[in-house]
Amino acid sequence: MIYGPIIFGKRIIKLKSNSTYMTKINAHTKISTLLKDNPKALEAIISLSPKFNKLRNPILRKLMASRTSLAMASKIGGVPIEDFLNKLHSLGFETDHSVEAHVEETQNPLPGFLREAKKESIITLDVRPVIESGKDPFNLIIKTVKQVPQGGILKLINSFEPAPLIPILTRQGFEYYVETVSETLVNTYFFKKDNTSITDPEKVASNGDWQNTLDGFKDQLVTIDVRKMEMPLPMMTILEALEQLPPGKALFVYHKRIPVFLLPELKDRKFEYRINEISEGEVHLLIFKA
Image 1 (cartoon, rainbow, N blue to C red):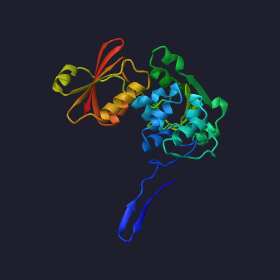
Image 2 (spheres, one colour):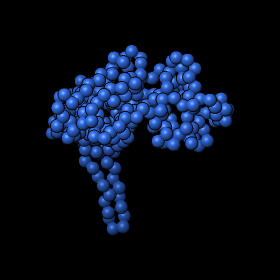
Image 3 (cartoon, rainbow, N blue to C red):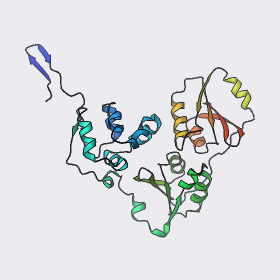
Image 4 (cartoon, rainbow, N blue to C red):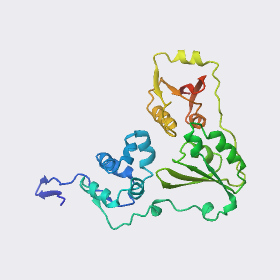
């Protein structure tokens, strides 16, 4: 029961509620909503399945939480939706058990270009084997995108939403739709509208003044190492660090490859960068405000 203020004349007596968080939730509620209302929901969700441990990573959590509903999490973790609702109810959330947990209903409606697509107009590219081999699928993706005819669709099969690729292609006129099938299977459809032209993002920055630029930020560096991170964490981690970069400082990044997805994003955000290729599998980046 919730108690509110009681007014006696000019006196106001506030009675405490037994519950702090009373957001009404159901199978379609996004995880981001839960975490915003009650941070304790994070550990409650993780306790239901080891598959949710990745939510501890703040970068992945930021990427996934706003896109994942309880119904989707239920399917990913193999946990009954009732277990979610009961666990969250114990934290004070008001739960609605009447909404069916159909993952299909949590997806955004199919866009027109996909509803009306003919099978022969879709080119399919599965980049999971490329990523699992430790290689960057960027060149293969761009090569395949260029082969998609006007009015055609690229179906990109991956184990995660290709967040870095989406802004690159949408800036060039593509429409897209993300279909999350399971924890390890995500289909992203890119529709090549008429008069859409493809240009390669800048791949290599001039590093002729690398040392001079580096010396200019002596004692003003923030350093991160993304070499052991799996995609798409390197790019997400770098962008997160740049959001928190103090004025006058530069971000020094240890990377294992030139982050071609990242470069156009940096230019859009008014950052300059220098790249120093040390060897195969060892790249240093210096990123700073223009």
